[in-house]
Length: 233
Image (cartoon, rainbow, N blue to C red; front, side, top):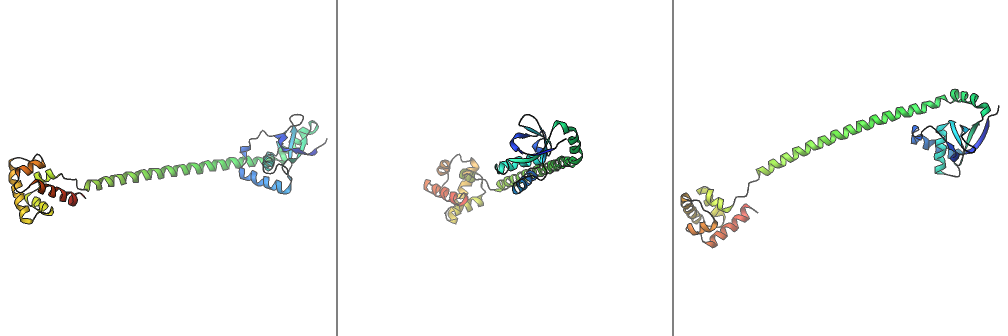
């Protein structure tokens, strides 16, 4: 019965265990140690799958770490130490693997546990993000509502024709005075406007000029110009 130790090209080895079973951080760490030591202290156990290819029986972590080491430095990571299982001692060595390498199964369990914990953290993160998005949407809705309230508080632009038709006598006199007309003149024109509109509403600015004594075309232009600058800058 013979157990041979050999250096085997990493590229000729395969494994039935998925690489994803092992954390990338652990593989990277072991790979760096393999390169620094230029070898692995815990040889993988292989059996032949064909004339010049091998399959891992035990030591999948070491194999994937060696494969990563080969990616980093093809020269130093080209070969890996391995025990080759021959037909004559296969059963005995498989029993040894079961007993001596059994703790390695904990790596997979630990990885599964870590994956579960990571999934839980990601789920919690997604939940927090969703809650924050909902909060922002609520705040946006409140801001839009407040903005609309502020817009509603802004005085609406009143057309000059509406002012002549609807302002009270004192308010109209005041507006005419602010438009550059003298106080007495503004009061007299306001009285004339009220008298005319009591008979019928004005239909246009030209109608005002035609019906109200004291308002010429030039005076109307002056009033409109001043109101535009004072009321609607």
